[in-house]
Length: 266
Image (cartoon, rainbow, N blue to C red; front, top):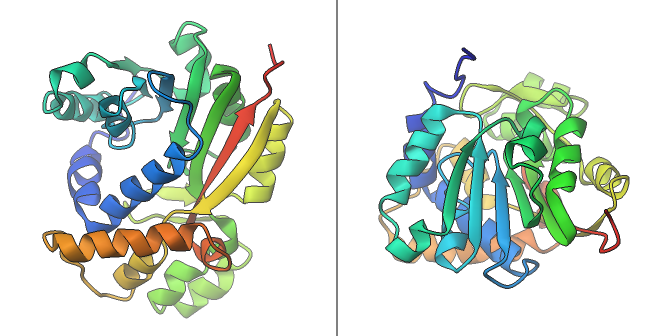
């Protein structure tokens, strides 16, 4: 039996991280960015490494046919708990599948989707190429591929904000670090991932930042109250605007890249 490496982190990730202001901003900003490029519902969406469904369940509520693929039984248990809280019509549009992203095409029996999401997964892999290959294989002709991952160009931001100056200096030329969950992570660049997509008949459309100011505030020791709904909404609006503009998006610790599969691709 394969060990579930996320078993001990499922509560912290699914319950605590997403309950924070930064977690809300991540979901909100990504959702708005996706809606700019997604085909209209009821298009099919595959969320690879979708965990507890924080990003894809809102799409199910918006009318999309959603499949969440994740290797972790613990994370899928969290997804089932959250799924039970959705309206009945949205629940009927969600399918949960246990499987590795690097075997995604087989895990979904060769089905092609109108959109394939992979958010916050590539950074846990030594080599992103096999997973990117699977994401592109699972996208239907004309389908969307959506990847969110760490931004190697901004790797020094976190240690600098935490006043770890030696680590910050080393980060200018580094690709790996211990992430906020205590798990080793690796960063990519927009340029490198764009080339991987193009080599698989997926043309990059646009890229965004995901969070900026909330990240800096957290690492500098400031606390934002998730119960202050007015402030949270104002924060999310600022983050969404920053995610679309230079130089702000380039300074975001993570980025969101969207591409569309060639309509003639087999």
